[in-house]
Picture 1 (cartoon, rainbow, N blue to C red):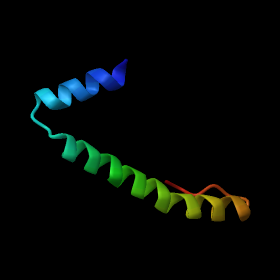
Picture 2 (picture 1 turned 45 degrees about the vertical axis):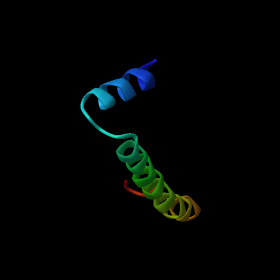
Picture 3 (picture 1 turned 180 degrees about the vertical axis):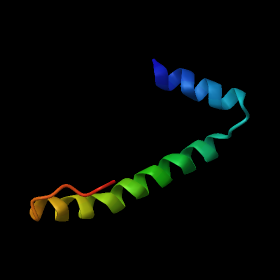
Length: 50
């Protein structure tokens, strides 16, 4: 299970769970920002450039 080992490596490197949660939040925020642009691109018949 890659996720478990990734978390273990992160903990070994000294990252806190807060930092990991912050990273996830940033990724989720970025994804949510991209969704409207993506839907807009689909409605215009073209795919947005990520």
